[in-house]
Amino acid sequence: MTGAPVGDLVAAAVERRTAVPSFNVIGLEHAEGIVLGASRAGIPVLLQISENAIRFHGGGMRPLIAACRELAEAAPVDIGIHLDHIEDPVLIDEGIALGSAFGIGSIMVDASTLDYADNVRTTADAVGRAHAAGLWVEAELGAIGGKDGAHAPGVRTDPAEAASFVAATGVDGLAVAVGSSHAMATRDASLDLELIAALAAAVPVPLVLHGSSGVPDDVIREAVAAGIRKINVGTALNIAYTGSVRSFLDADDRATDPRKYVAPARDAVADLVQRFCEVISPALLSRKASR
Image (cartoon, rainbow, N blue to C red; front, side, top):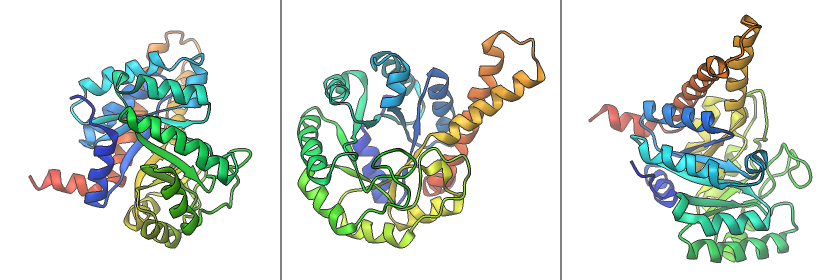
């Protein structure tokens, strides 16, 4: 099935008061595991390729995105492709230029390390060009925790400022700082659910939760109920993948064929993706069961 446009997937989540599960891809096995898990759950998801992942692959985004496009087209569920946390202007331009030819449905223009005025100016410029290419655009305000510089723990997005930012930039989705943090290895983050509700009431575009690997299942459900419409998961997949590889190699110190330990690692990613889909989008599962 050809991947649906990201904007359509998010719009459907808004209508159903659920969220689009969005998973970060590092390599082909990550992407395969994500698609397998989503297919088992029967839930549309996004494959997300970050600037860090692009750098890991030598700075070229085409091979990995092309692989994701092929997986999306062969999947039995709708799979969108999203460029995540793109800060480099050259990569922003490349992502917009590749656009629909490579199956890219959306891009996160991350200018959050800049001051407010420069964030607005940079984001608005990219939004105009991305919209002309048919892309849905996400941006960030309030600096999600867990990274250096502007990504400081404890920062919170102000609803009034968020509404002004959206009006000034024309973005389609907004990543907000509400208590989650990138790269958490434990699931004990506490979200400000009242702030999420206030942001959802103030901001006319869907809200995005980053750092969701560190958020407990029940809190994820509460965040969706409060107004989050796209949920990003990355670190949890890496923990599952690496843990599986480590267990295999600990049990067999003579193993040399990577297929022997990468296959169960890919399956571990699929299992986790399926579970996250069932947590994030239970409304879609209940609709399937009632048919």
